[in-house]
Length: 261
Length: 212
Image (cartoon, rainbow over the protein chains, first blue to last red):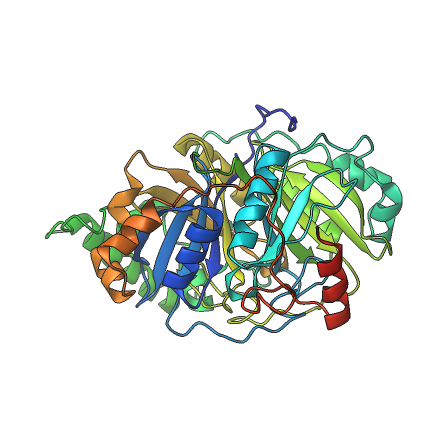
């Protein structure tokens, strides 16, 4: 079973973590622990938020499954909008359809399926003749979970007819298959100028976004980093941090007055 | 028997209404290559495309005319990396950078495409940068710091969640599973109400009947 060979071309090396919203942090952690044998590695109050808990479970040496529970987390599962409910249904653009983990062998897949079913959870698959053997089941809070055994890529991975149906030409497919290598500039790039209607929303509340777009990176780092483990006592004097907060505040006021933001 | 472990996250699958725009973003801004594109399902209504990450995992996208054109901040989508969204939804995905240099190079790459990116911030166990993606996705790139993550198991959180010391111990040391000789069958159809995929009754019954 081979995967595409790692490339020296710089692009992210996998997923560091996913952050899944949950209502019952303890219950969800127990689900992943008992049903899938995942190990808890972190559990702390989220930085910069009130009463929000972050929990992380280990997938491998670098990948983590993260859970976030907020006291006001919306409860209502709206099939077709917030959640698809199954791998054969859809939900809103930009929402997750399912999360898929992988195990090394078919035997491992069947063993995991036995583990899931022994907890009284229906688990379906693998289908006979599937190129990529997979099993599917429901996780906490209505999420859909899958597990696969990685397999050889399809002999013809690009179906141009399907691509055309989705609005992509053969040229598009060729272009998308060959990302351009990135030449790093001599000095780090600052954020781009504030635009009236950016193509991609800077994911922060509007006022914060405007300020974040112009704050020097070093100030933000000093102001918002929380490098100390919660089990350590935080340093009493945090001059660098307070200094940075003051500077950011001043920049905010000045920029507002001059109409920059 | 040693505890069965996962080798990796395989992929996360997202919905999109504009497959070309979505794939182009990930190719241009993050440098991901398109690995596959094909029909999903027998009826040829949905198309699935996968974009590769360098460890062999991928991001996959499901395009279909049936995908709702809906963004409801606070429910379907969070507004920011610490924001609310409905239980069971994905608040954000963070990509892995192997080194700080890679993280900073990715930040340059992101910004060079006119996409705003905040950070890095040092969270103690990782450094992170934050930016937005297509379909109002929230994205992050993080690099692990060389520290022990268990130092982020906070006693006051454990207490607030009503977990005992044994409870935390069990969570940190999952029990191995003795896989029986014969594969385990599904519990009866009417059981498993709490964790159940959503299908019509007929379809669910058929799916159940098929499962060995």
